[in-house]
Image 1 (cartoon, helix red, strand yellow):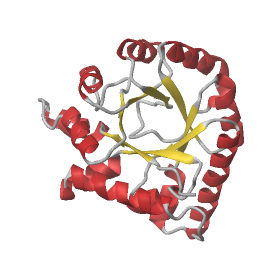
Image 2 (cartoon, one colour):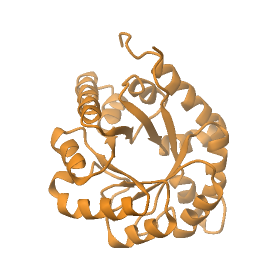
Image 3 (cartoon, one colour):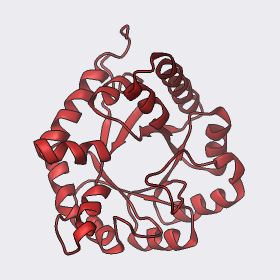
Amino acid sequence: MPASPIRLGVNIDHVATVRNARGGPHPDPVKAAEIAIAAGADGITAHLREDRRHIVDDDITRLKDRIEKPLNLEMAATDEMVEIACKVRPHAACLVPERRQERTTEGGLDAAAQQAALRDVVGRLAEAGIRVSLFIAADPAQIEAAREVGAPVIELHTGTWCEAVAKGDIGAGTTEFDRLARGAVLAANAGLEVHAGHGLDYVTAQRIATLAEIVELNIGHFLIGAAIFDGLGAAVRKMRTAMDRGRKKIGTAP
């Protein structure tokens, strides 16, 4: 039986980072989203941060109005962000940890320590018709907490593994990949839809696509960086090819 397809969500946050560095309307993250979709992206991810350091409210509104594929709103589990999400009604909302001093999301959400608050947020978003995911580590306690609070989807944090691969640390890379693989199986067996993201490039995306339980990858910073040299459409197509190549290896030796 052929492997099921794997979806690609393209995060366009850092198009907005470049725009905001100078001010004005260019480059437009909504235009980037349209190019990514035309090149094969299955959806668009955008993180509306508390400090609006890249994506701003108008970007979210325009993305919802103009793109033809699902919009995944990354957001902190705060009243402000829940109100915005319930007003805009994106297809999905991924709850992530957020600290103003971090450069990027540094780790997974500690769902196990915030179950009461997260259960309320997940419920409010679900009532608005928004599919909710939690961005968590591939840890059994976090996976169980995601199930307990009613989130139908998790996104496994791949950053630690990707860093080990980039450093050439074979031992740590193997350990972290095995942890992701076990977490994906555990989550799928618990009835959760499994996504993954953070730090992925062509090589690591191809590798993690070999995990049959993972049905979606969300990738941003690497693609926007590659787009500087190759163009965004070409970068998305190359990523799509790498993911599909990995998917075909399911069931074969690594």
